[in-house]
Every structure is written in C-alpha cells, then in structure tokens.
Amino acid sequence: MATFKRRIGDSASGPTTFVSPSTQFVGRIAGAGPYVFCGSVDGDCDIDGSVTLAAGARWIGTIRATDVVVSGEVDGDVVASGRVEISGTGRVTGSLIGHSIAIAEGAVIEGDISVTSGLEPTRFEEKRR
Image (cartoon, rainbow, N blue to C red; front, side, top):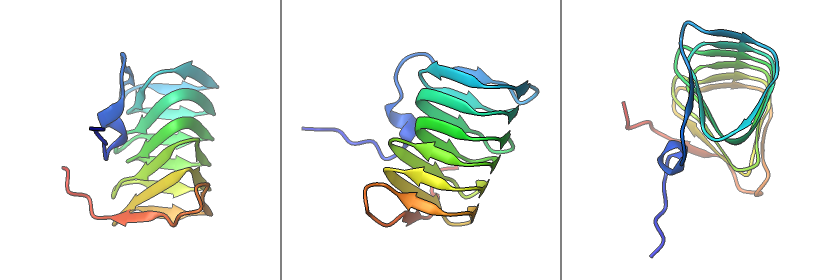
C-alpha cells in the first residue's frame, strides 16, 4: 500500500540545511536536498529538493525548487516542478507556478497562478499550528 504525505516536509529525506532567523544572505543559491530559510534572502535559488520559507522570513528574488512551502514573504516568483504550498501567513508578490498548488485561507497572492497539471489550485484551512 502506498503512503501519501499531505505536507511537503513530511516526505523530505536526508539532512536539512537551515538558515537562521538572524542570517541575511545576498546572492545566488544552488544545491540539493531540503532547505529551510528563517532569515532574509536577496537573490535567486535553484534547488533540487524542497525549499521552506518560514513565517517571518523574507525573500527577494526567484525561488526555483522541486517543492516550495511559503509561510513568510516573497517578493518575486515561486517556481516548482512539483508542489507549491502557501500557508496562511504566506505572502507572495509575484507569480506562482507549480505542478500542484495549495493555498491556505489567509494567504496573500499578488500575481498570476499557473498550475502546470491543468488542475485548479487547492484552497485549504490550516489546521496545524
């Protein structure tokens, strides 16, 4: 029997790279594996894996990854070959592109939404705290 994970982070494997809340990063980021950003980033990324932008974190630039979770603020585009999830605290000023997109109640999206699977974006009420 196949096990399906609702949340992107539930299926992450391998060591996670954490960027602390006090960190300010400027430049291009490339790599593989799961990344969690809690500070601020001014630049673009191309990650073969998941990228999570924590609540209170800020990103200026394009986030390009396999899967993306946004709980903070993005001023730029979010592009995922897989899934995009915007939590209730998330705010994106830019385009969202992903194979599937889930947007929580309370999230703010100021830009185009493109679901490459052809399905409509999923709307949900956040139940995890």
